[in-house]
Image (spheres, rainbow over the protein chains, first blue to last red):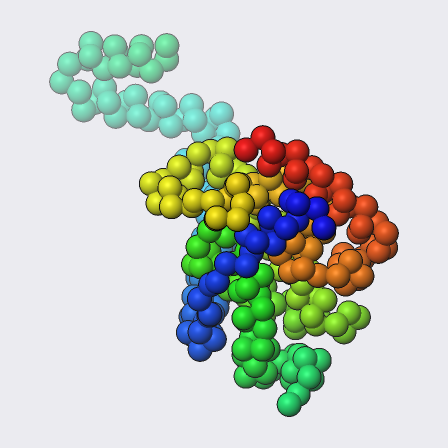
Length: 116
Length: 174
């Protein structure tokens, strides 16, 4: 045997305390239980995250049309308003404003601002 | 008394008591294997715990192609290699430079410490490291090592020879 092997063998002949199998098993059981609990916690955590993410993604998809688009679609998009009707509406509102206004010049200025 | 394979079969059917029996049967052997690598008994116990935790998972799918003892040695050697790898990193990161490490003095018979020896072993290529580990720590015959690592007896002898020479060079510089 080589000298180095002898030295290694000598290094390993040191006495060491025996291990207590009962204590070892108790520790093994508690470590195992702790790992199982951690695994469960991790699984629940990931599941919750996936659910929250899914709900978030679905909500964003639903809100893709913003509120003003929804209102426009709901109230105006399908309305059939002709130019004739609009002119009639402007005439009526002009007469009403001229009639109700105390200051004719401010009304004229208002119409000027609306048209420009 | 039931043999190892019978206990494993019982464990695969759901008996944790059978697994505990296996632990009681081999805990001392596994602990003795690891105490040779480590500076203190707590590290050895931690490594033994890791081995049995791993077995608790893997034995559920054990297919009885090799004997349990051979399988256990493989798990031990892998755990030891991982430990040596970690030690190498710890050394590189200077994590072992704590004051309590000062007690790691050389034994009367050798010129270097157990830690220096395993640091040198950690630097060997994988097969040499496995062979040297089993040979020097367990005093295992070449034939048994060959069956555990799945190589021929002559390959084991060659790897052992190169490994020891490498150790001699490395420890000569300590």
